[in-house]
Image (tube, rainbow, N blue to C red; front, side, top):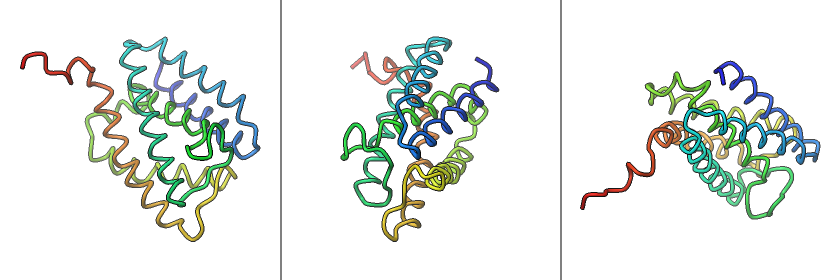
Length: 177
C-alpha cells in the first residue's frame, strides 16, 4: 500500500474512532478500523513481522493508557471492555499508529531523535484533539501532568516501534550459548 493511502486511512480511522467514542457509538468505527488493520497486515511485505509489531504496539498502548487512566490523569469515554483498562477504541488506535511505522512514517526510521521529539509533541496533541472532540476528559486538575506523562510515553513509543519493526523474535534469542 502506498504511503499516501496509509496516511489517509490512518487519519480516517483516527477520526472515526474518536468521533465514535465522543458519540458513544464505537462498534462500527472500531470494526472498520480493525478490518483495515487486518487488510494492512495481509498486504504487508512481511505479514508476520507486521502483525508482531502491531500486537506489541497495542499491548504497549493498552498498558500505557491504562496506567494514565488509573493515575487519574485521563478519563476515556466508553469503558468497554473493562473499567480497569483503556477502552477498545484506543487499542485500535495504537494498532493504527503501528500500521504507519513501515508505511507513511518510514521516513522517520533513520531519525531517532526526531522520532522522540515528534512523538513527545504529536502524541499528546492527538489526545488533546480527541478530548476536545469529546472522546475523553482530563482528570481533575491534571491536564499539565497528563500532557507531560503522554509526552514521555509517546517520546519512548515512536523509537521503540521502529526498533520492534525490524527486530524479529529470532534475532532476540541467542541460539549459541
